Length: 117
Length: 117
Image (cartoon, chains in turn purple, yellow):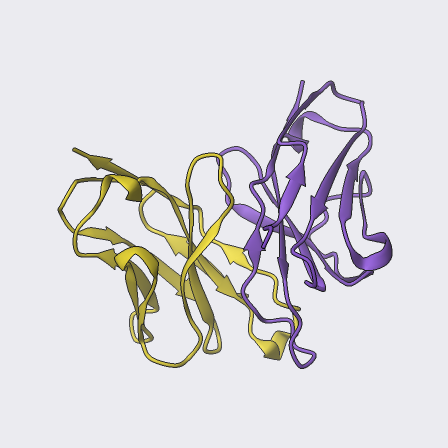
């Protein structure tokens, strides 16, 4: 069974440009999460999808970040325009929903390392 | 608010000696606690989890952790380190159902484990 995949693995862009990160969850996983680790800091939650709906987006830093999950399969996270402080590693995770409860193990992708110059 | 603190940013041990990675949590209610590991260029992998069953939790690769409510600790141990254990380890708490926060994870700062031959 394929795990969570993320694309690209690395991205280097200049301040002011736009970048789109993609996450493909494990097939059949309705929950999809985005997390971010900024250099020297802990991994922090960004948002949570259940299928195509945003369940919790309390961790999104500002309106330069836009996450979508059309059709409830893969998700994209767009940063526009990118700023220096957006540099870090962006992780995606997915998990199953069982009996309506979203509290099962989260499976993580390898992350996308974003560098903003 | 729930939080988790990893007491050491870096731990170095010799191969064959015991491993101790320390973690303290803050929670008003009985938490769900996890340890994840990240090897270089790989995704985060679940080592073990505590969800209010047995206080001594056994995980993969010979790791275990003990939940101590009186000390608010969830330290990770292994009797004998192997070179392949070198990685970064994360102690993680999941907000309880009472807060209905949809399963997002709260991470500690991470502990880098080095294993010397």
